[in-house]
Every structure is written in structure tokens, then in C-alpha cells.
Image (cartoon, rainbow, N blue to C red; front, side):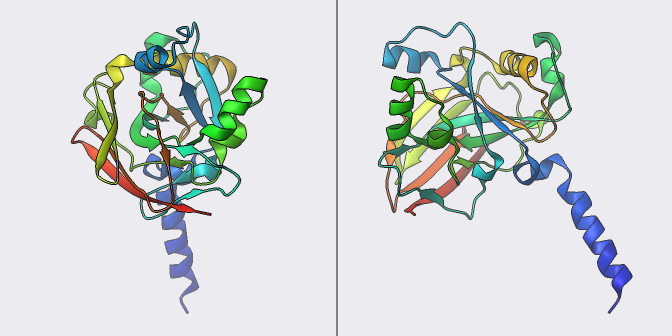
Length: 232
């Protein structure tokens, strides 16, 4: 057995996993923006937020294609939310809006699966959103999209189908707080590190899914992904 060769291969694999292409494996935290599309504000008839509404999701919620979205048995109503994700490329803290985009390492297509049954009660009682947002498999993501693949992050068509039926669509031009706003705002409160993900929010028409449903979503024709839903 060639121990030197094995050690070298292990080193190479570890080195490869440190790049942003492996952000879904190496991410330490996920920050999500709620109520960040004007159509959602209009749909729910709520005031436009004065500042971003931000919540945290654990990295254990991340999955990629080939894995299933598992609906926890403790929840009765889990819904899809298609979003643009921003992957941080450089460590940053207290950055201005003008410099914020320089800290982006790439983008991704993402789903923010949400237990609406839990979130409704949490909102009503002023409780945290952690359980309804952070359960295992609640953050499916695509491969890394390099910055040069996204000509304008604020003019992207998002769409989502359930069992081949189009149910959710929108455009990032409708964001209340844009990508620079979100990076700058979040960096005031916590250090952002490479591989961290900011989910920018979802358009209206987030609907519940059930066991056996197939979710397909995309950013225009640029990228798409597909996941099966199953009960725990």
C-alpha cells in the first residue's frame, strides 16, 4: 500500500473542497431575508419593512440535487420558496453598500422550505423562526454560479413548478432590499465569511407540498434544479 500516494490524494480532495464550488459543504451560516418582495407585501397587506427582516438557518439544512426534501413528521404544512442565493467570497464586516458587491463570490438558486404551520404560530406569539425555517433538508441549493454568469442580479426571472405545474414566479427587480443592501445590513451585526449564504427572499404564492411531489425551479433558462419531496 502506497501511504504517500493515499495521503497526497486525501490532501488534494481536501484542497478541492475548500473552494467556493463546495460552498454547500463548507458554509457556516445561512441568512434569509423575509418579506423582501413587493408582491408579497401587497399579497399579505402588511407594511413595507423599513429594514431587512433577517433570520438564520443552520448549515445542516443544506442539500443538493440527488437528495430528497424530507417533510418532518412534526409539521403539517411545509411550503416552497424559490430564491436567489448570494455566496460570500471574502470575509467582511461593516461594509458599505458601495463596496458590498465586491465581497460576492458567486450566486446560487435556492429553496427556502418553510413550515408555515410553525411560522404562523411563531409570528403570532413573537417567537423565533428557527424550527420552521431550519429543519434538515430545508435549504436545497444549486451549484455555484460564478459572478460573471449573472449579468445583473437585480433582473433575474425566478420560477417554480410542482409536478410540472407553474405555481411561483417573479423577478429580482421586485426586491425591496437588493443584494448590496442585504450584505451591508447583515455585516453590521455579524462577520460574513467565505461560503456563507444570503437568501434574498421569495416572490408570492408560496404553497404547501406533500409526500410524492416533485419541485422543479430555475433562474430563467440559466439554471434549474429538481427535488423529490417525501415524508419523514
